[in-house]
Length: 234
Ligand SMILES: Nc1ncnc2c1ncn2[C@@H]1O[C@H](COP(=O)(O)OP(=O)(O)OP(=O)(O)O)[C@@H](O)[C@H]1O
Ligand SMILES: [Mg+2]
Image (cartoon, rainbow, N blue to C red; front, side, top):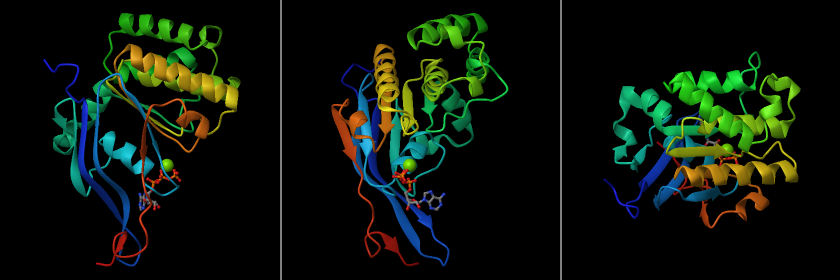
């Protein structure tokens, strides 16, 4: 059983390159080392194009890094292969900038569909959904379809959906980009609180200064220069 000081996440020597039209490859991400514990929250910032979304995609095992490795809870993500979807269903919650709620289903149904994907027993899912809807101020909106919700309500629904199955890793990519200051503050406060309570690791990519101020740990990515250290001619 890992003790509380064993890192939940360990990143080593991470590099990712994308091939550009014409054959050169451009470095999209460079992160030498990062470790984090369960229950921690950290923010990833850096200029546009510095690789924030690429990092989250690697952490979600959606893309395999060109170099380096990510070990999460003892699992090297490079080794997941065909079991990546099952790993995501169990261990990962993802909050997107544009929410990605299912338009033909109401708030509760959006949550219950996510619960099914994560193989949660229906009773436990309903109980957890009721708890989260209460905490996120959505009880009166649970029968509403997304188009009837304010942006803040939509993003709080997306938060509930992402953390319904109490995943150990919660990733959020610019989760406040479509929100005003008040809603942005509320979404971030609730997301941090709920992740802390379930000892999940929360990693938020953002440009938003007011969001950055809420976090004690900040990871700043640098954008690759066009040249030998960044773009590489093949
Ligand atoms: N699928 C892809 N194919 C080719 N290049 C890509 C791809 N995805 C990202 N890139 C490039 O990789 C670099 C990093 O992109 P990424 O989206 O990770 O940056 P970001 O820090 O999230 O930027 P933003 O703040 O604008 O969201 C950019 O130069 C981008 O153009
Ligand atoms: Mg991005």
